[in-house]
Image (cartoon, protein in one colour):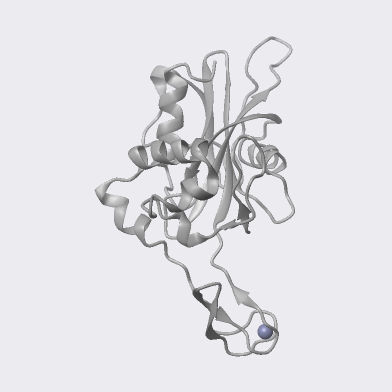
Length: 234
Ligand SMILES: [Zn+2]
């Protein structure tokens, strides 16, 4: 998936965000010039919270697996200079491999002083508690993916609200996590609907601020829970 960068004022840029730019220590002049000051401030916050000595190495050099053969016509690829960068390119059909970021959405679903968390049943972070979410499918809009993922992992029907944050994905491949606020309809008795875990989750529940289960799956989960506990999203 290729992702265009925009400022909060609207679409301002004709460039694309590529995997090499999901390095949270990319040169400072690159992004402000391209994305505008508001996005830059957001990235600075992310860097402060999410870069630790432990994950610094993987963040500085996202693992990108390069193709040896063209995925369309099976011709052996070669390196070609494209817009000043060496890219794996097909001499037969002109395919070029751009190492684009993966994009995921997660939902901060909260009501009656509790937040919805799911326990991951698969790697990465198996056994850790996370906000429900997952990868976008091609052609899917973020809020559509959000509703689908919440349904798959918790059995609950959610409505996507505002975009809260865009964070770097920690792991072997570069990516972005879009965090949305989301709501669910309360039961007729005014209580929270009972989640039923499935798909990538093997546990699900509603948790009050002082009862967050451990371990928490990802730095991005931790960051968003801290902000929720501090009352940022009320
Ligand atoms: Zn080809």
